[in-house]
Length: 124
Image 1 (cartoon, rainbow, N blue to C red):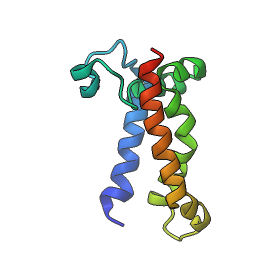
Image 2: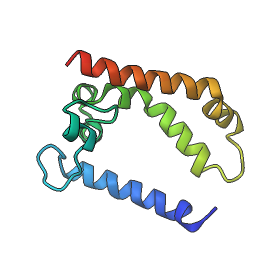
Image 3: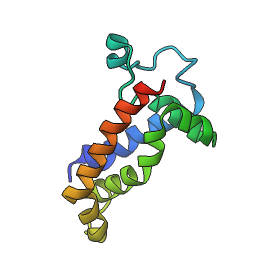
């Protein structure tokens, strides 16, 4: 495993978490905005992710769900995928890895993502 994967990714994640804890992306200049939303006026599946993470870090779950429901619902899968990809050097999480990388799991996730993208723009 390369040094960037081993150290760089966790350091970047912790840095992002610290930034999002102390700075509200909705009220702070400098946080990136969604190019898809800027160009089309529609929300992409990830729109609201920064604001949702900020709310989750402050235990404001209802507001996090308001900003990006799909993000909050898919976090267990994202954490499991991250764990088996970056933090399982001894291969002890093989069963979880098989579920995460199973084509059925991936296809269900992609279908849910596309449905979220469509539904969030219809009901807004």
